[in-house]
Length: 153
Image 1: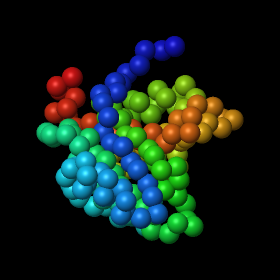
Image 2 (image 1 turned 45 degrees about the vertical axis):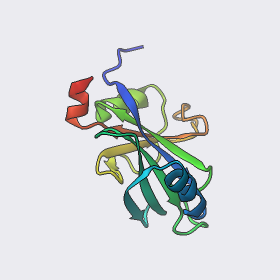
Image 3 (image 1 turned 30 degrees about the horizontal axis):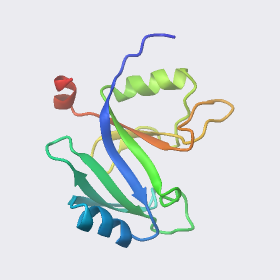
Image 4 (image 1 turned 180 degrees about the horizontal axis):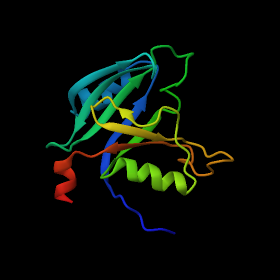
């Protein structure tokens, strides 16, 4: 196997879905004490999310509490409830190129700006004939790390 030209630097986010925000916000915000860091709504991604912050500092972990704008439309951000995990990566384009060459299937949409303003791409939860490797049931978001985070590693 060729040498990898990127590194996974850490967890950027955990996204949890439900039909409403209420119970997840009660648990994660009210009972666990996570701070609200923002909101994000997207018709094309069928999502209304409240972004919470876990930990201190610039690279704290996001816990995104998501609900679908329309439960009948796709993507269905509430199925499964642990919707996806986000991983910081130092060179997103290199990662996509390397992983694609090694049979990893990406979800439609390519690299784009994510809810937090960083470039992102999603690894599909399931492989297919052309690209047999996926997240084995888990949607994985690769997130371009900011330069100052890369410089620290």
